[in-house]
Image 1: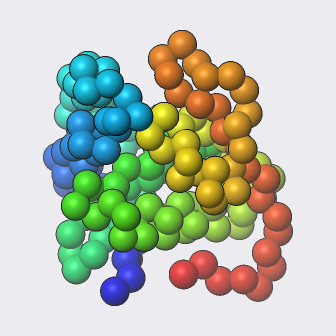
Image 2 (image 1 turned 60 degrees about the horizontal axis):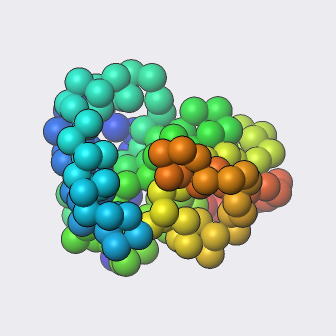
Length: 156
């Protein structure tokens, strides 16, 4: 069963906020101390998620009508990728990332930049990203991936 993708709407705010919060609380440890994950998650607000919806291009991955994850892009920057813990490890993140990379490639983006949390760094490295600088003061890893033109290639 594959995911379907669509642009997020304001009706998705609650679910997107919940997914991000639960992903941080449940998936960030043990790569991050539980208390650090709790502090990070406590900073998240519904109004902040609404602002992201207005400022970023956010795509959701749906499985049987359930939003299983979301990813946000702006230009050549991957602003975030979060998968609901119950869908982690089932290819939702891989598929969503591939779809976002495909969109960026179609828009002639030559390289994607992002910051990966410690728990997500290996996920990105396995998908061709490389560290692009030292770990930031807040614990994120700058990463980047070159995109090659793929004329005629379809994104699943």
